[in-house]
Image (cartoon, protein in one colour):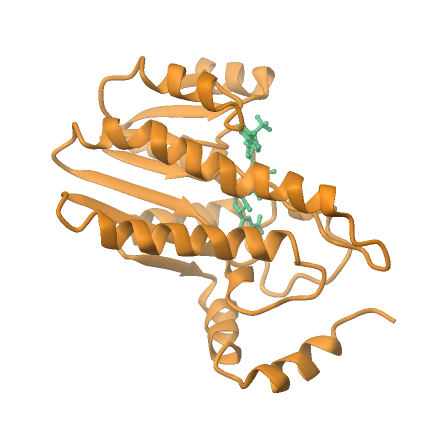
Length: 239
Ligand SMILES: NC(=O)c1ccc[n+]([C@@H]2O[C@H](COP(=O)([O-])OP(=O)(O)OC[C@H]3O[C@@H](n4cnc5c(N)ncnc54)[C@H](OP(=O)(O)O)[C@@H]3O)[C@@H](O)[C@H]2O)c1
């Protein structure tokens, strides 16, 4: 398969790129970090240095490819809101890095997927979007937007042979979560995350969520009446 992975210079995306390469697939690994891209290139992966917030540059770069069978749109970031300051520029940054990059990547990769007889589009959201979590006004909202975008696209692509998957990880140990200053229950390694994602994609699942102990608990909590969940979630907020 020809596989394209965004955010492949670090964390979950890097592990996926290496694992798919080891499995013998042709992997296009995308990111901005030149040194990390060189490392991947030395291991035999194909690489592309693209800032996914730059629509023109992104469309330009993708147009140089012929076709893609599996696109995993994984690039993203996380920043938390710290009241009493509600910094709208933080919200803008996170929406740009998470939602706009996914929209731009979808626009760029769809024509390439349409040239495949076995097309699969996968986007990395987050289990954080299952319930409103403290300090996640920006991150959670961006991942909820991604979930809506992906689930809607699946409906609108019904007349085309393109499988659409939403990937919702719990906590995974990466440079992103190494910055977190709060307990991260059931945090798993990038190896485990890559295995869960590849297994789910092989089965062409509409939603891939893991680790199950954490994500199923969140899904159950999401059925609680709003006011009850709010009381519980308020207890998580540091005084
Ligand atoms: N780790 C977790 O616990 C967790 C949980 C749920 C969801 N997720 C999601 O999983 C994805 C990967 O997270 P991670 O933990 O592996 O993070 P990470 O190690 O920080 O990797 C993020 C990747 O995104 C790329 N990226 C960010 N902005 C970009 C841009 N404008 N253009 C191109 N590339 C860009 C980075 O590339 P450069 O460094 O080269 O710029 C890097 O390769 C994210 O979407 C994240 O929200 C992670």
